[in-house]
Image 1 (tube, one colour):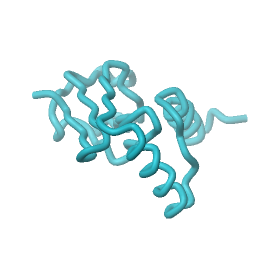
Image 2: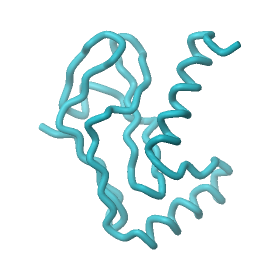
Image 3: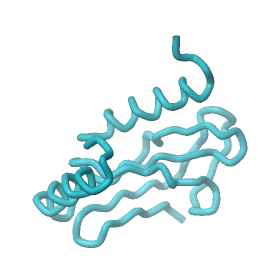
Length: 111
């Protein structure tokens, strides 16, 4: 079963299978990994996965992002940033950089 993430009328993302780069755990179901850190960007829903086995946080490379309504998605991302005070993340690369920094900070690799 593929992982599916949808914001009705705005965007959707599909992932066929996830492999943890930390420990090699493989999964293709909602119960296999935690996805609470998933972010919505101007380019769609970027899934961020946490492995329950080794706690590695990563952005799966195999995700397929789709935008249903570009203007409504942009408005929703801007409004959410305004409401929450969180910065706007423009694309998948921005989310990857945020996750890399978070992992380095968590592991004590930032100097």
